[in-house]
Length: 290
Ligand SMILES: [Fe+2]
Ligand SMILES: [Fe+2]
View 1 (cartoon, helix red, strand yellow):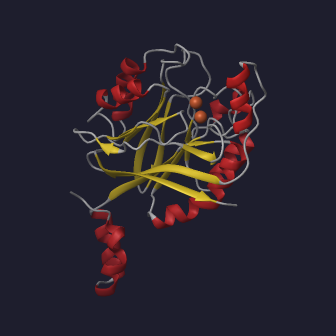
View 2 (cartoon, helix red, strand yellow):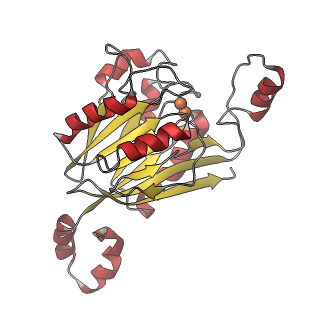
């Protein structure tokens, strides 16, 4: 098993020359990816500002990806908000069923290679379903898929995944899949279906981090849901009173995001850059009382 060399950097620096360390780091390298769960509105963006830099430093992160489908007040994303998130350290974003909620996205998604939407939308939908990040001299492929259970009936994400992964594989063995889906069964099934074919299958959409982050048997890192980056004392980011009342009355209600403590949910994944196999996945949660 490879190690992430920079984890041992300080110890090695005591006894070795720094230049030698840099050379060795190039030889024995493990790519460390941070994937942040759905960023919800201003509280979610505030959590990114508050936590991301220290997480990147503490975990020696090489690449940061986030799901941004709720970044604009819970509904889609705007160009300014996307730029704000890039400026705060996110390099690439995936979306989900809320991708078209803020119509402004139609004006920029075709010119924004750092932001993708589920690949299984019908042919002709704006934007791309997969893309690439360049980091540490490597290419990382990212594929965004939407589930079809309790979500719009898009194209089959299972057979589609194989087609899109084959295209990504022509460029790189390092592939991260964001599976934006509701049903745990659909998510687990896609994880097993893609085991050994991609570096990671990461669930998003349900906004609750699951306790099943693990390596599957053929080397794919998996979690059913990465969780939410936004207001903790809420129902999936929305003011709890509004949602409780909706369950009580079955009447439609305007959603408002909650205040209070903010959290960031994410996973950290170590990937062998030569084989694209994952070596480790760890779920993390950060919380402030501000
Ligand atoms: Fe979401
Ligand atoms: Fe969603």
